[in-house]
Figure 1 (cartoon, one colour):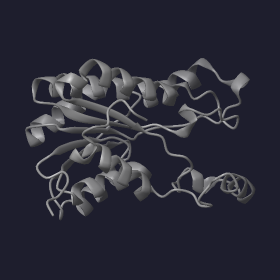
Figure 2: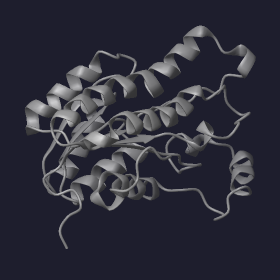
Figure 3: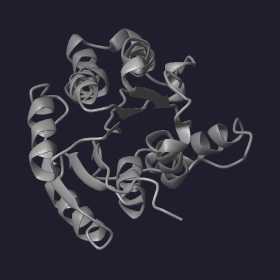
Figure 4: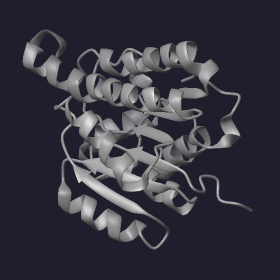
Length: 237
């Protein structure tokens, strides 16, 4: 069976840990050349070493708080592998500040990482996709985009991702551009490992499977949306 992403090039943000890291590994195993990015360069180095036995990998450290890094990252990918076919925006952050204690700086930082940077990077890619027979955008959003989460400040950034994929699909779907979002519930990552046992038990009691998700669970879904298997799915979350 041919690899699902053979000869494709994917940009994956937030790849230094958790979901983004697992997505990068799974995409490489399915034949993609991957460009990985995140804040922690030492993590990117070790990830690249793990991926290279499967295929091409390059990394570029940077922050999602810098919207100008989006253009730098896109051109780095293009210069490295000569094409871009897939974008996965997995980088994200959450604020646990109580709603009425949220400052403008808190708000701006979360919006920059979770929405402004993914938007600017997706526009770089979509512009290229329109001129080069299409491509796929996958946003890693959250169930918090659809549900009220009183344990965190308002999650407008993740809701914005859901709108963004609908807009991109509606405007550019006829030109071969696919844009979809994955909205994970609780996943075993570095963030959720800091939860108290009491909070973990409370969350588990609400989950139909009785367990939290794994990074691979989410990576499998991202792989599906990035591959030709999802060629009749667009604008969904």
